[in-house]
Length: 401
Image (cartoon, rainbow, N blue to C red; front, side, top):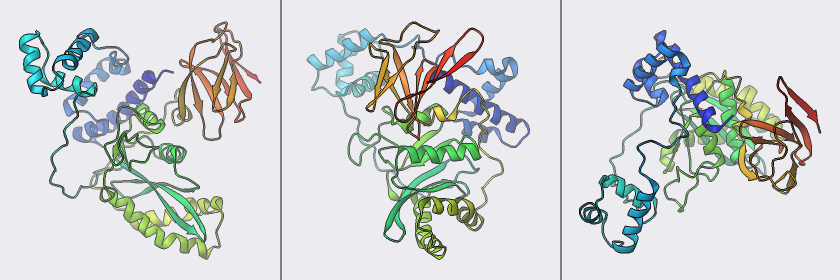
């Protein structure tokens, strides 16, 4: 299934759940619109479409297509060349006046400014300082989650990373585990545990770690266009990522870690726990439950923004994974991380030479190759063929390698 198709299905799944809660008055229009990330009028319009045409009325035919009113690329290039060759030392406003008056420019000042900024000719100006005030908690669970890691000597002479995913509205811990090193896979694991136990949520608040964000300049703004593997997965799931630029912005998770760094090592020492697997079992079965009972607060309003994951056609494992595009070699192989993945001949096409395929790598090191929405084969961590999938007219044949 293509990325656009997955995004459509996830969006409709989220809408159905929110619509049902709104119908039984468990959510107001304002809350439903905020959960879906749309305006109240947009939510009402979607409700009318859903009531009139069902789920088909919610499909967005624009996705994956160029807008009909988009400016032709030739005109964009012509404007950029004009600026580069004749007016490179002009301000944006000065260039816009010349372009509009003497070169028959017909688009707005904001369009010219945005195109010059995207092309790298003009830098965005820094925003003026804003008056800061304490941020209120989100009103209901599932609207925003925090995910953060803390490296600490949780057991004597050993430092592990503790990855915690918690709710902004209630401080409830949904996922917490120890791992040798924080990274993409630990972030995937935290999100997966939340979705499997609670459902899809609206937004995720994180630091600017390299597995969450690409940051072109050290300590600068994050790049919201060139996403990391984790960012791509969140975009497919419809989860908005929010970067934190100051330690104070992550105050709730920082206070949590201070409390756990004081209490958790002593609890582990009392039980003589030094093994990471045993420590994780203690976290899951005892410590998190005690923490939530003592420190969880009541949400400001009733209801929940979580959307249960009920979509049988979408495999969560194939979204929360590393995805890379590759070109098939002349011998129908794909080279991926020093592994040679052999594509078997199937009934769909004679060969895949020079075809663009996507490799999915999973947490255990195993891989799959996808050609469009079709999975061609599964591979063991060493690259050997595990299952080759061939499609006939009436069913799939799974052939062990």
